[in-house]
Image 1 (cartoon, rainbow, N blue to C red):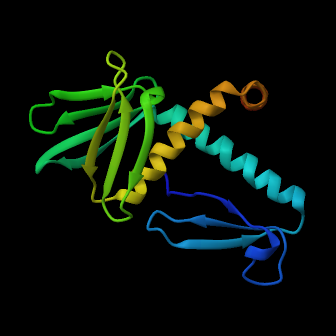
Image 2 (image 1 turned 45 degrees about the vertical axis):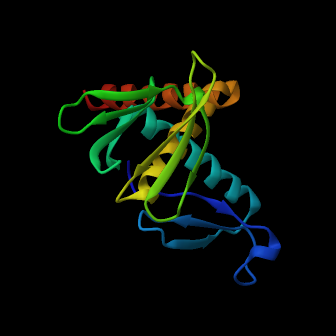
Length: 182
């Protein structure tokens, strides 16, 4: 995934200075970048552009794998847009567990390296806790959030309609450009 960018839109009471229509983006290393735009409509345009870019990037990459540690063993966690979460042994590639996005019932992190996932077992309906440790916690959290945001976007007919219109416009422009160049 490209640099982690998580927009945060500010209320008047949150402003760092007198500028209106401000937002922050967080870089991959966790640094907050503070921006402002002239009009409220520009802010909405930034938000839509961010949501669209997130969706398109998740759609493009489909899955992302991170190295992690489970009980002192080197593992891999794959976040897959189609299937969900897959944890496997890094050496043997044997799958230890897999859960759909819909089975994630909660999660928490320590702000440093560990994420605790709470998944619902489909057979027993019991909650199963899985704790993994990552060297790049912020990137993993950003990726999980991006995949969930893309999943939610797939349920929004307005978002999907806008995506279809954008794809058609880009395709049409490419075709016109190709005809013009021929």
